[in-house]
Length: 146
Image 1 (cartoon, rainbow, N blue to C red):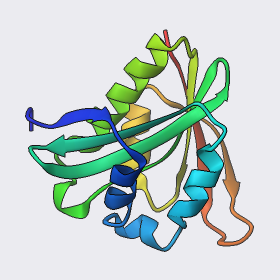
Image 2: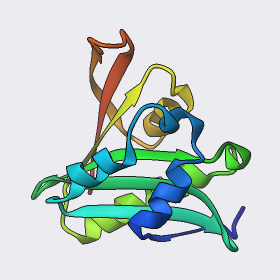
Image 3: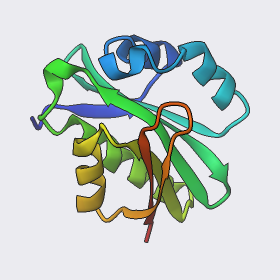
């Protein structure tokens, strides 16, 4: 799918894609996202093909050297087409250009495809922990940006 493009998005576009990612509809209120990034240096990305929005990624600065890849998703009809990887590659390139040295990201047990993609692209799993509320396993990954 070489005609997939990634670009910086409006928050309205992020919200539109967010509503169409089933795993995220119940897990978070989009207004809560806005509160979390209000003061942060953040990067909202969408992947699109023609006029169709396929997926999104939203991240923000944890500190001057670490960028946190916070939340993202791909609409189910467009999974398996490299959309998430294109978003990841764009975010990494942008973070390098901005002078960040590290990207961190968390994932959950149920997102095995994401964990596999992160491992394949040189993200190191630093730690695991059990979510007190849900009992789900969470993984913290980090990649050094060279």
